[in-house]
Length: 77
Image 1: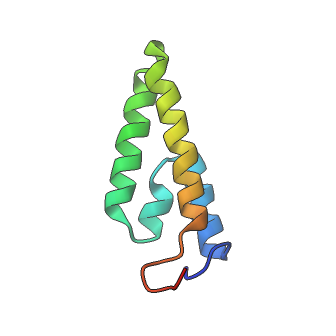
Image 2: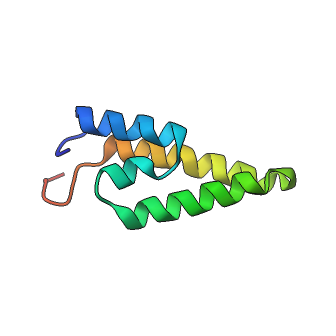
């Protein structure tokens, strides 16, 4: 997963559609995965308050974009 748009990044982004943070976990970034998962699952669990659910939806979209555009630590931007 060394460049944006690679097959691994696409698979990671698709994983985030089903469970937020799973794509980051596949890419080997457990801290980012944990943060996305906690915020999204917690926000969706409080759906009746509306605002946490909106925040969770924004974080899930952010997780998808983050996984799709991840370039790795060793690649040059």
